[in-house]
Every structure is written in C-alpha cells, then in structure tokens.
Length: 325
Image 1: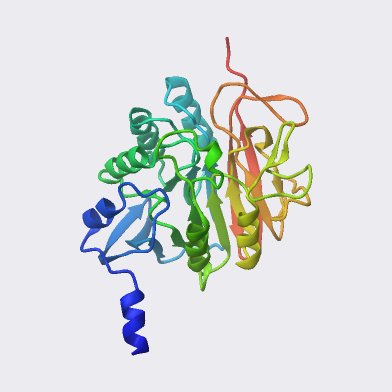
Image 2: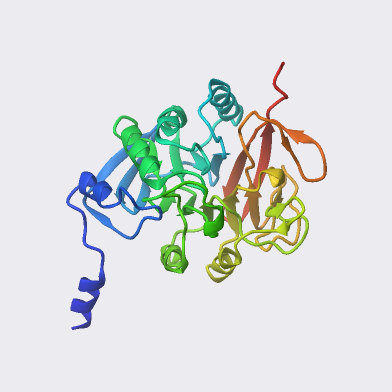
C-alpha cells in the first residue's frame, strides 16, 4: 500500500521534451517532472543527460574544480550591450558552465537576441529569470534557442544540475512581488522554496544555489545592501541555505553591491582571488550604462568567475572599462 501511495505521489514522466516544455510554457518556477526518454546533450567535449527537472553530467575530468562564469542583468539587447557581454565572457577564460541569472531583457524580441548570444559560449549555458522577464516570453525564447543549441538549459525548468565537480540548484524569480516589474514576471513562494529544499536532498556536493536576488544579510558588507535602504535580501532564502547546509551561492539584483562577496549569512566580507570555506557572490550587471556603486565609484559592467572545489570556492571580477564617448 505504501509503495502504491508513493507511486501515485511521484510526478508522472512526460512522453517527450515537447510535452514537458508545453506543460511548463507559462511556469516561472518549474515543478518536478521527468522525461520518459532522457535526452543526451553535449557542450564542448562534455556530455550530459537531461532527465526533466534534472541534468546529470556523464563522465568526469581529471581535476576537482568546477569553473563557473556568471553574467547578470544585461537588461537590454542593444548592440553595445551584446558586444560588451561577449567581451566579458571571453575575458573569463576557460569555464565549464556559464550562468546568466536573470534581469536579462524585458520582452520577447530582446530575449530573442540576448539568449542566442549567450548560447554561443562553448560551455554549458544555464539561464533563469529574475524580477524583470515575463516567464512566458522567456520560456518561448529559451525553447527556440534549445532547438538549435543543445548546450543551452532553461534553468526555470531544469532545477538540479549534477555536474562533474558540484551541483547547481536553481531558484528562478524573486521573493517580493512588489518588485516584479513586468506582467508575468516570476515570483517564488513557500511552495517553491519547499521544492527547492527537496532538490537539495542527497544532491552530490558541493552545492551552489543560483538565483537572481540574494539572501538576507546581517551587516553593511552584505551582497544585498541597497543604497539608503540596507539589507534587502530574502530571509527565507537565508533559512533555506542554512537548513540545506548550502555553503555557496551565486546571486545578483542589487547592482550597487555588484562584485561583493561574503559568507552565506552576510556577516564577513570575502576577498577575491582567495579560497574560502563558504562563499556567496553578487554578479552585479554586465550592462555598459554607468551605475553608482556602494562606497563610491562607478561601474560600467562586470562579470564574475566562480571556482568551486569540494570544500572551498574563490571568485574573481572582470570589470569593463568606461565606454569611449
């Protein structure tokens, strides 16, 4: 009887990817679901098996480091924005996976330019929505790119990525509905957090939480500090990371705190270029428009490199120069 109840409670596998995608076309934060026949994918020399809400890397390399490029908050599809994003990605050097964690564009037409540009990368590419994108438009554009680029993963739907040297857990959207600026933008709730917590159970470590907005910090050095407001991150996300014993995370959203890093509770600043036993980072914005930063100075776009090993991680920041007049 117990076995029967567990079977009935388990998500029914989709017949194929088309059915899986159709069922989620309007979903901002993808639910559980598996494919009847997993899809074999490649990115460069690496191979993966797409099983539905999970992706599993097939095989492993000789090192113990997962090298992650992070690009965030492109915001638009202007030629200068796309050119700068390409340049920043190139400056990251060799990476195993590229993460684009939200606030990438505002409408379908812009997304149809931004997402293919990201897919040009010779690595696995994982994209999620932030607080700006319409989920329907984002999912449509992502599905169009996936049809021609099998290294491209919609992290709204594929929520647990078991890679060679670490597992990525995605949490698309944003926690505060007041700051979801577009009709159909992603807002995650307690049910979504509970499923995210389920995804962390028995995940091969180390785990990295990937979301647009950061967790709630406790001090003025936090990656969630907004100008004249203070710490504005999600306290429920902080609880999630603590309960799931997640020591690492990749975030963005608070642009003036871009390039910052701390421990998961936001108590202690983490310096770039050094290994840390726990580390969460804010990738800022890759957009070339000027942005005033906390503590003074102006940024003209940035990208991060996040290197993960079994019990430690480090990061570096690539900053764009001021555009010429």
